[in-house]
Length: 362
Image 1 (cartoon, one colour):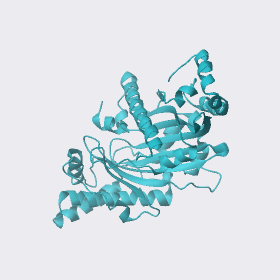
Image 2 (tube, rainbow, N blue to C red):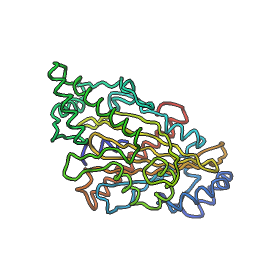
Image 3 (cartoon, rainbow, N blue to C red):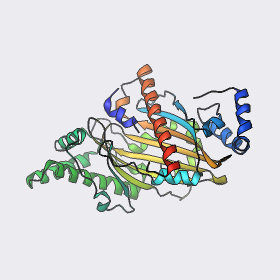
Image 4 (cartoon, rainbow, N blue to C red):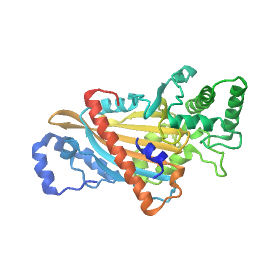
């Protein structure tokens, strides 16, 4: 498996009726309060059978998504319970930040609206990390017609200018690269805030341009049941045409992550949409990545349920990824990538379950 994708990922159970009935005796309130939630989840997801008592005990169901005609796309679904209210879970998803540990996460910043240069003030490129060093080296080689990164022709031209100016001024390589990426990231952040998801600039350095917005729409169209369930949310964030003027405001973030070969910049935003009956939908979208993949969407549907221990949330999670590294895979290798993705996601979910209970950083 390609190490860049392995690093990126480092982001179905079936039971008989008799077992369900036996377990329900010990969790009667969960069975009664969550029956509708479970039926709703089963109606659009890959999980035909959901053993809620086992989920309440901590089990996490995962299922690799179907193989589709979209060669760059891959997906997976998860189902689990968090012993907190949907509002608390949604807030945690939107506000929690991975700890900057200089091993996996080099930089993470919350982005204000409107974005300011000060939002990225904490960015520093540490050449002691080999993948950061390679990021700097490749940044200094960017030209208007050639780059190893995902960007537009205009961004490549601008980055070449910033690098040339830095070299002329005698600046250190890490300083030059930091200025170049700060300039690009600020431009992408402003574009996203002012124009929305659909207007994000394409990656057009190659023969066939890639539009982040169209990649997201294609991922959703490949799984119509999921798209239908989240259509309102997807319209309100601007991914699909909407009949209303309602637009959700997302909580933006920027990251620099360990990708083993070349450190990766990501830009994303988290949107929260309250529904009726205490349900909540959440979208975490990464609309820019400097390398390794094009876009990533994570959708959540949160249902309030009652358990013997108090309020809790039944969670369905769907992860959808478009990556150029996937285009050459098919059959068994492609299925293997999906299984690895789900293994990493399951570990992430288990960490989230523990952290929200202990109120520790995600």
